[in-house]
Length: 234
Image (cartoon, rainbow, N blue to C red; front, side):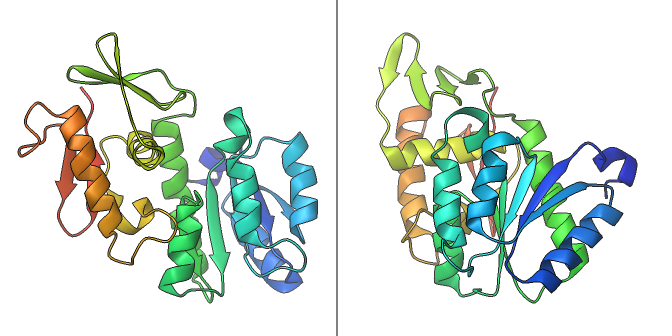
């Protein structure tokens, strides 16, 4: 676990309309060494996000006015580094469909209330480790004869562009952002996908045909049994 000294430069935003829970989260994260800013609603969060680049944001879903799903969509649609800000959704809406919707909108993780403060901290640390491993805007990664530009979301084989669907681009970006680490199938599920992540399996099959010299024995887009998938660049 990160020490306070390790985390002191990390600036987190916590958005929750419940004063008690918001303060509890802020106190716990501050004790862990993070710098914490809080907001009671989406409107306040938008103002802060427009002027400050946070290392990670924690969004509640059920808030007066704009909800956390809409706020997540807005943040992911922002250009450049702000749009890549890691997002953890922390909410009482813990049904599988809610989790799939949040992850499909681009959240990095989803934790249901009530929660254990230690689990919250561990999940935040895991997200931040992935963000450090493949920072937004990193250069192209090599996948055998192919090259994937994470910033542009483009795949090429030599000088020839390889056409990707929007869903394939999003999936490859998620996997590239956590290169050499297994990513949970549910985390990869697009909005509206079934709880088993079958649409992800279909996209992986199609991506392998575009990436791999032998799709039946993949070298770069590997299955991690019981978890999901992992991208292993050269």
